[in-house]
Structure formats: structure tokens, C-alpha cells
Length: 205
Image 1 (cartoon, rainbow, N blue to C red):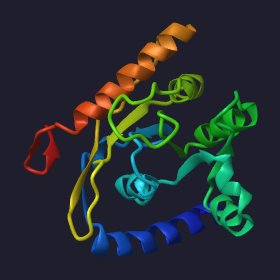
Image 2: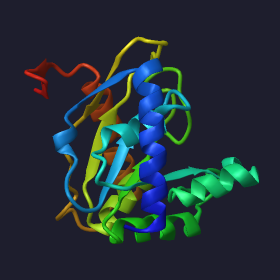
Image 3: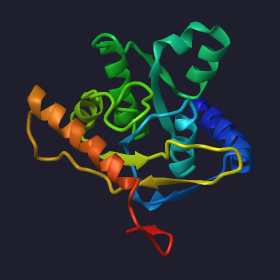
Image 4: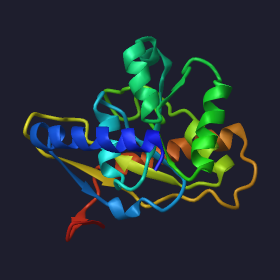
């Protein structure tokens, strides 16, 4: 186990204890997270969403997050983020360095955590998703894993985090910009629909 995985595992456990008491959650569909590399994608409505994403992915996996570069201006926070494998991305431009780092994460067999909308939203469909998640998944030959995190989070009120079945992009060939945008929209639609998924016997129907 490498140093970043150790730091991630320790921090994940500590936050799970805190959130389990104050902002409790129940994960459904955890078995849908596949072995090996995968791009885990969720809707983004609250600063706590990365924590819930990490809680929903089995502990044996390391989720490396792509986070806005503004967070790295604070040196102590930047050091902590880098220690757990999180890396910066310039959301305003095509950040080739971030894309290369993301591909390295996937090619090493780890999970890449992304919020395709690129920013926190107040209502579903408020902004068009970025195509980066789909592009990275195809380049790395990794599946997309949709995840729904409820918008409303209240103290001592349990929420349901739902993980959908992985989406494979194998055999699609080179995708045009329009196809990437269409697939990104479809991905966010699937994430939104997970919020209305029926739970049967503790499993995602």
C-alpha cells in the first residue's frame, strides 16, 4: 500500500465516523463498483459530496479526486489534498496536465472521482456537464460509474447514496465533440434517474 493510499484510508475512516453520527448515510449499489480502474461520476450540490463519494466506494479502493485549483492556494490544505491523491484542475481552460494526471491514475488501476458538472448546482440540469469524464474513460478503457448523492443534507437525517451499474464505452471508436457532449448529457440523466430508483431488499432495482 502506497503512502497516498494510507493517508486516504485514514482520512476516509475519520470522516466516516463523523458523518456517520452527524450526517448519516446509507449506500445502495456499492456492489456495482467494479474492480480495477473506473471513473466515478456524481452530481454535485454540496461541498461534502466528495466525502459521500469516498464513503460509497468500497474501502479497498483508492479514489483520487480532480479538484478545482483554487483549493490548492491554501498551502496546508494543498498538502493534505495531495497527500490523499487529489490533484488540481483549471476549470476555465483545457488543462492538459490535469488530464495526463487523471490518465495516470486510471492506468494505475485506481478510481478517479469526478463531478461532471464542474461546479456545485442548485437544480438538476442547471449547467451542461463537461465532457472530460467521458473522454478520460474512453482513453483509459475504463468504465463510468454513475452515482447519485441527494441534494438535501440535514443534521441527523439519513440520506441514500445510490451507485448505478458501470457504463462501458468499449467499441465506440473515436468520438466526436458532439458525441462526447451527448454521452455526457446521458450520463447526467442516468445519475439523476438514480435518485428515483426503487430499492428492493437493500439492493438497487
